[in-house]
Length: 355
Ligand SMILES: [Mn+2]
Image 1 (cartoon, rainbow, N blue to C red):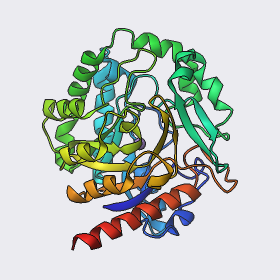
Image 2 (cartoon, rainbow, N blue to C red; image 1 turned 60 degrees about the vertical axis):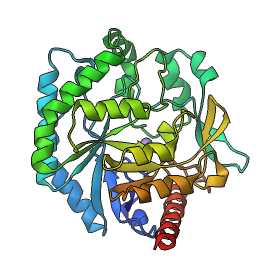
Image 3 (cartoon, rainbow, N blue to C red; image 1 turned 180 degrees about the horizontal axis):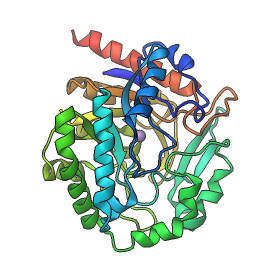
Image 4 (cartoon, helix red, strand yellow; image 1 turned 135 degrees about the vertical axis):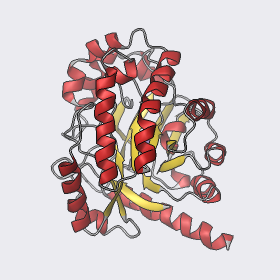
């Protein structure tokens, strides 16, 4: 595996490439063109400039998170081909710039859902949290306003104000889309992009739905092993793979994370590894990466990745806000640096004990 960190780009991220370069063992960057809209073509020039900026810091781009999918593709509207053509052009430009990993998601309306961005934990750190009770009493159209105040001024990925302004319209677009329709639209998209992925050896890594069940009555399909296997079979190409996000699949306690990892050998192209602390089955908060701070056995997760001979990029995921840092919730420097170091430590111990 290669240890990486997500970085939103100069002007969008409070963390600098110089700081990331100083986290021991982190060599790769997972990034994006944060100011592009879904459906827009990423020019080769801009991708190249981003690459140059990252290499000048002594790091390199290990993958893109994300190239977002236009709603027309997810809904399957008559104009979807135009947006798929644009997506293919973006993939081509990434391929020409020697970038071979693209993370994306196929979630309707909301990229991810939390009900709190700054829950205070016993140690005084703050974390993102979720309770089903809060969701059930929330109007999805006002959810954005209700949590935005805790965002530390950051624009949260998938929660861009322009997007949230047309939330009613978005719900309307998806009103006839159920799980089956969403699967069919994903298949259509994947079949169209696989030739360019084959040509440039680009691994597509779908990110799970977060949380891994339906919220606000919207369809959710990338939620468990059965559905991932269905997705991989319906377009059976090694470039059609997954981002194994422990914190997202782990929201559903029926998902046995190490077992899932072993079952997905060869098709996990990217890994997000983090811990959650469950207070009950439908109340969880994001913990430190350390096993004993949360509910997951992080050793078993890393051991499963080792056992499937995982060679792709891995990154610590959301961190707690600690040491008075002010940053995008989940994406500060300090706790993610601790997470990367801890995961590297587990990995070294696993490698050496297996010799
Ligand atoms: Mn993730």
